[in-house]
Length: 255
Image 1 (cartoon, rainbow, N blue to C red):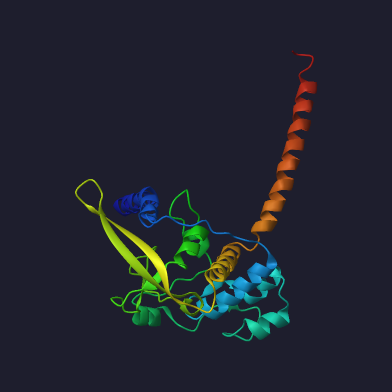
Image 2 (image 1 turned 135 degrees about the horizontal axis):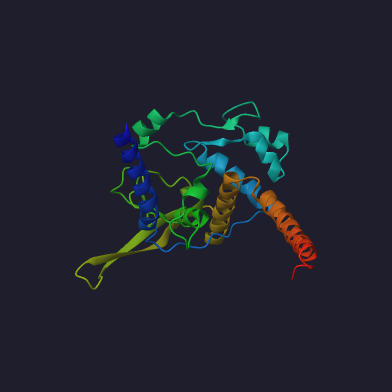
């Protein structure tokens, strides 16, 4: 029993030690800063994109549809425009596809996206939002891949480019250079080969709205938590002043 416990402790310690290194390994591509917004209009647009393009394969099972009222949507708007997988507004944002079906069709089950913006943090310099923002703008055509798509941020990704109609087709220009240590460094640059229905600026704005919604989805009460935190700090500061004054009064005859 002790041996089992020790093995478990060692595994957990290894995970804690190497998790940052594993994250950094996926962050060797420079990421763009995501213009995350808390504006209700941006979040509503992001919710529309998420439901129409992401919720087909990825679930958001830790969020319920009625929570979308927090970003300014009425119950009627949610029911009429965003609920395609259920008829109850209190239901979770799940999908019909099972994990087994996902593995069979894509080689790996598509992950739940509720907390994806909080979990995808390649390093201390970048946020999960930065990773998502760059990733969704970095797909390019690759005939060698089963889906016909590849990605500079997530090489050999199994996910196809679901937003390709909006962005268009990008092509990759790959150059290999000496790294100075006898090895090769691969540099990939992208260019738009076939425009989509949106301009580059509009597509970037749409991706920013989508990422903003995914950030909000990971913690819908974040703004409320921050505002409460300000009042808590003010209260603690006032309590410190009163406590210090009380301490001075108690000890005035001793010092």
